Length: 193
Image (cartoon, rainbow, N blue to C red; front, side, top):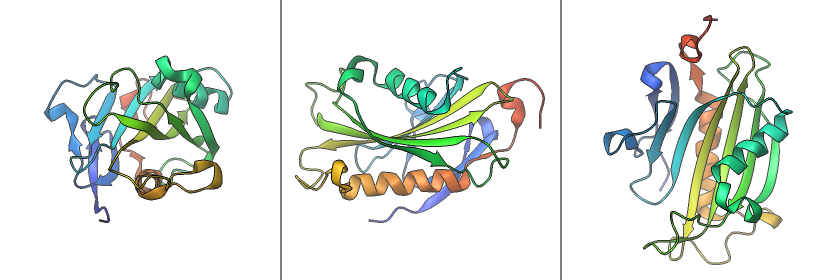
C-alpha cells in the first residue's frame, strides 16, 4: 500500500512538513515534550519523531552520531551505522547543513519482552543544523522489524537490500527533505529571519 502524503503543521504551525496521512499525532493520546512532535503509524509499528535540540558543538557527522547515541543510549554499543551522507532540504535557506544516517539497533529496553517485540529497528535520521539559531533539528524515522511483519531475509543493509519497511521509511525521509519548511523562525528564539 502506497502512502498518501498531506501537509502537517508542527510546533503550532512554525514548521510544516508533508507526512503520510494515516499517521496519528501522539500528543492526542499522551503528553509529548514541547520540543518534540511524534507521529505513529496505526497500520504498523513505524514512527517519525521531530526533535528541536540545542546545537551540539561538534563537526557535522560527529554531531549526527552523537544524536544517534543519545536516541539509543542503552544499546549504543550494539547499534550499527550503515550509511551517512549530505542531504538537502528544498524549502530551507540555501546552504543549510543537512545530513542523513541509516542505522540498525536492537529493540531497546522499553520494547524487550513485550508483545510485538522487534527483532531490530532500522532508524533513518535527518540532522538539520540551524547554525544561527544554535539549534539542531533531528528527524528520526523508526522502522521496527517485528517477526511476521517483514519477509525474513529481505533486509540485508550491508548489500543494499532494505525490504518493504525500509523502502517505506526512505520514502518518508525523502518527503521530509522535500517539504520541511520553517514558517516562523521565532520558534528557535532570537531574531526572525
